[in-house]
Amino acid sequence: MSTNSSTQGPTKTEKVMAIVIAVLSGIITALVAYMITRHLGGTPLVGACCAGVSFGAALGIVKSIEEKLGLL
Image 1 (spheres, rainbow, N blue to C red):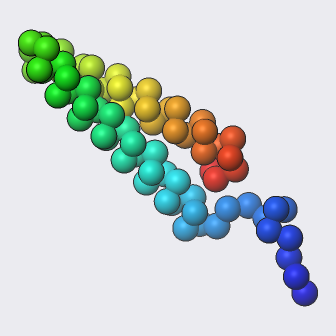
Image 2 (cartoon, rainbow, N blue to C red):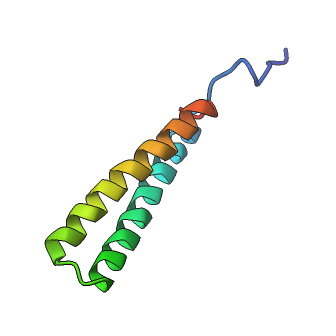
């Protein structure tokens, strides 16, 4: 009794790992955006706003890529 892996969806572990990768990518992007903004002379509030926007953008991009790859 063999199963075709292409017809089965991702396992629960693969889905969790895909979400973790997306969130970590967003966190790294947010930290880099904050550091660059502060380095260029922005206030802490501007840095936090840039970090938030960058986090959302990176999370959305990675999530859409993972959906297209069939991981979510």
